[in-house]
Amino acid sequence: MDRHRARGRRARPSRHRPLLSVAVASVVLVGATAAGTVYMKAQAHDGTAAVSSAAPASPSSSPAGSEEASVEPVAEPSVDRDALLAKALKSVTVAAGAKTSVAVLDVDSGESAAHGDAAFDTASIVKVNILAALLLQAQDADRQLTAREKTYATAMIENSDNASASALWAAIGRADGLDAANRRFGLTSTQGGDGELWGLTQTTAGDQLKLLRQVFGKDSRLSASSRSYVQGLMGEIEADQRWGVSAAADGSQWALKNGWLARSTTGLWDVNSIGRISADGHEYLVATLSNGNSTQAKGISLVEAVSKAAVSVFRDTAED
View 1 (tube, rainbow, N blue to C red):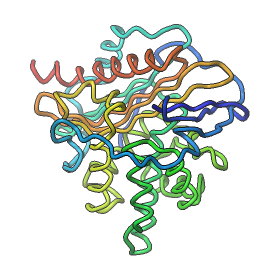
View 2 (cartoon, rainbow, N blue to C red):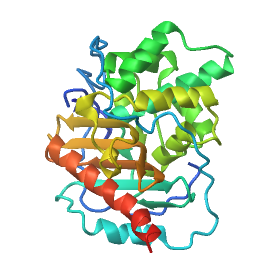
View 3 (tube, rainbow, N blue to C red):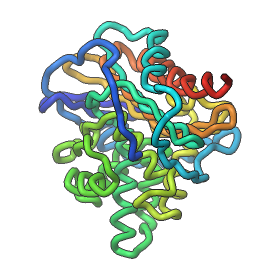
View 4 (tube, rainbow, N blue to C red):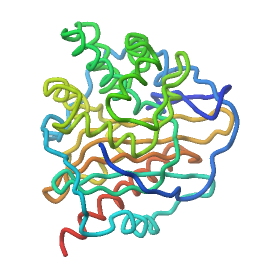
């Protein structure tokens, strides 16, 4: 699990373990996040836990992690996907005080839909961004990742290990390194967390969709080998973390990364999920963010319901 306890600094949390280029038009569903400063003291997930030595379980069948596809956007969508998504989300129950945002891309058609443009704490989904930045820097230096970096990357993505994330966060130059990479990736609404507080990085669903396009699309700053490497790790998430956007997939055709943290100032949970899934023969990139959840379990249920609703916008119209 991903447990983050946050206190002290601007409204961003962090903690975690037992816890592309597309235009986004949006609205926040409901609720407001408790104000207050936050501070991330990493435990088992978004901070300073030791690297897990246990080998993660393998998915029951081949995940959608190592393939690539063109994700060129369609200039003139045949339908208003954003409006359809807003309508679909009306069936999702969002508890008072909670809010969510989602962005989805149909890889096959290139059409996208989004709802909500507010900034959220990343928690551990930033680990994909950290690895993407590290790989970009390695490409610039014309080098391969070291054995130690690969060990950290595996633990950080597959096990969501915090100590490994902290080590690679330092390696990329912390927020400055992340922000520099993100400017090249086209992420315009993501800001790295201060100091060691990588879990307090702020982002939007739209930016996370752009990041997923960098990881899974051919039109990317990352090389084919770098993309394949990240995809492979996202397809081997340990068993107890296989939830989130994967709920919208057919079977186990997915590649994902989740993030979850609790704010010590409010006791409320941030729960996020990003990845690629396969449904009805189509590939989708999905980024779903949430905060203000009373429990982690309720946050997971919300993220999964929102992800299913987002993908249904394309699945339903594809059948018409």
